[in-house]
Image 1 (cartoon, rainbow, N blue to C red):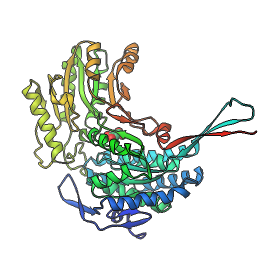
Image 2: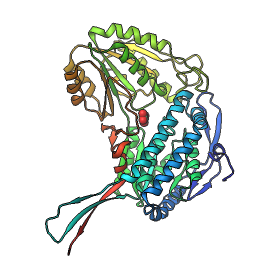
Image 3: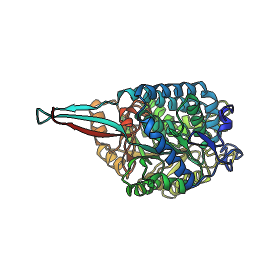
Image 4: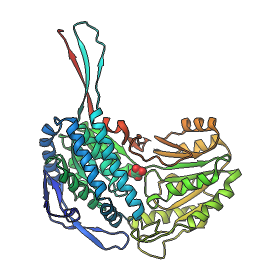
Amino acid sequence: MKSLDFLQAANRCLVDGQWVGEPVDPVLNPATGAALAKVPCFGGEMAEEAVNAAGRAFGSWSTVTAGERARLLYDWFAEIIAHKERLARLLTMEQGKPLREARAEVEYAASFVRFYAEEARRIYGETIPSQRCSERILVARQAVGVMAAITPWNFPAAMVTRKVAPALAAGCTVVLKPAPETPLTALALAFLAQKVGFPAGVLNVVTGDAVAIGKVLTEHPKVRAVSFTGSSEVGKLLMRQAAATVKRVGLELGGNAPFIVFDDADIDAAVDGLVASKFRNMGQTCVCVNRIYVQVGIHDAFVVRLKARIEALSVGNGMDEGVTQGPLINKSAVLKIEQQIEDAVTRGARIIVGGRKHRLGGTYFEPTLITDVSSDMLVTREETFGPLAPVYRFSHEADVIKQSNDSPAGLASYFYTRDLSRAFRIAEALQFGMVGINSVNLSVDNAPFGGVKESGLGREGSRHGIEEYTDLKYILIGGL
Ligand code: SIN
């Protein structure tokens, strides 16, 4: 296997340092519908083998020095960057996003590996003044054990490294189950990790039956932490399954992000931010803007400018130069947008741009703008996960805060204003884990990404991301 190129290696799974399985499950290119490659279809048994391998490897990996773990992570980072172009092409082919975005995702993915290489050496403990002269209290942070990562299709590289890198840095070993739609990038990343010398069993990747593998990863007593990014529905199920063995659970679930533009905002900056967030990955991110509230005084001017920007988006195969919008991941993604548009129009919304499947066919959809949207519509209550921009008109600050918070989701939120007092007031009132004020650039390696309410538990990225994979150990020393 060593002699194989990582693209070829991407059709086997990695368990205990061995590339295993027969390639049977096709991975489709959403741009063409053609099969790109096949991957193994394992069930619970192989997941169990992977957990056992990770369990065996934990003993030695958790005692490797932080400096050595950091060195391996730095080497992995360097390999990812060295293979950036090939990883980006693979990512676009299996996921559909434009190549420019895929390149940015590979850099984003690599940034977590570098960041946690740095953090590996900063897992600090503490000393606490003791209550007796003869005693000392120490607090150490120790790796939790085997960690299971279940990653989504919308960021096939970055969601892998955002979970795996902090876990490895902390001294955990990992079993990764990538999304069935996009396993190739994950396997390629694992190939590069193996190439730089991560020991056998430290990182394992299993593809196949999501339900059976997910059950083992959430119920096996050796797995001490589960980290999942995906829908709230699946997240709740995994959390229930993990409860029996009281695992640490990290969840990055659905969002329903409001984007509020106040009368005093810089309209051009707000339109730029909106387009960047709403149409990133064709609207398929959990932090994508979902509900656009524009104050009455600037509503019409905002819609005119937004319409022009949406009309300028270019739909096509993500591998083609100049394309800004690729295909959606599958037919049900298309169906969901169609249902939301139909429901909105029936209840009084107006289509300003788009509104239909794109003439290219397949899962391509026209970037769409609708106005006169109201709170009773499906698009208000559900996360769209597609290129549909619904605009609401509002008059009063208190009312827009109430509408924004009226959702079980609480991941990302955004607003544009030039009034400093309002900026603090609104940021504090929004019930979301992340708030972007005059900016949508929330996604960085050194800030804590995560939600409140039904959007999840725990944080990824930043120093908080590594804490998810460590337990505090209180050590009392007496007789001194
Ligand atoms: C996600 O959609 O799950 C992650 C988006 C991001 O990291 O920006």
